Length: 243
Image (cartoon, rainbow, N blue to C red; front, side, top):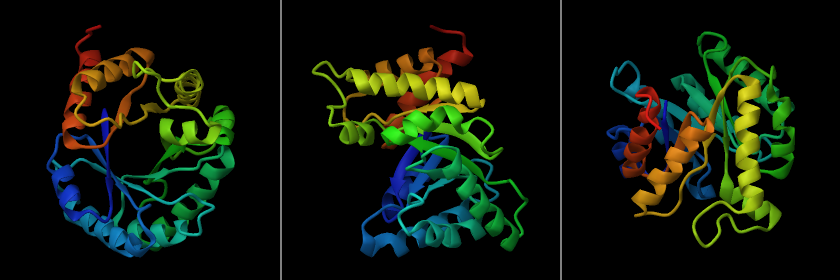
């Protein structure tokens, strides 16, 4: 899995395009405007059911609300009967967050006759607390399959600009990127690089994806199908033994 394409769950047209794209995984984001959350949940469940059994379908992952939002249980009640491949947890604040989500998943797997432990977790580092606690994710749950980081969210928390004038990560964000890679390695899971948010900058995205691959990341978040294809090509070079 090299590219994870993030799509708002309430955008049916973009979801359809994502499913037909080259993305290795589609991340259906349920954190949309309050009036659209039920639609996002319904769309996510429908997409999961429709893609079940399709050998050509990307892995379907659902991004739920953070555990302190009051929305997580509603998200899980809506999508777990459709058996997502994994759940992405924003606002991860260390092992306790992962263990809390794992318990919620176990209950719903039992209710939906899903094999226990079948649903993976991708933890997202998007707070300073979560970044400092990431080292303790090792052994927190066998469900954890990946660790991602969110540059924009972390920049907002510390009051930094995410990138400098040349497009490189500002110093605090580069530190967060490095720590994510180390924390993922310590936990024995895939490190997933943050999304590149500037549309139409294919060469810069390609360079950033190449850099992520060389740094030890296994995958990168994408925001549209074109980005997913560029990311796939960059990470494929690892399999070919290219620099």
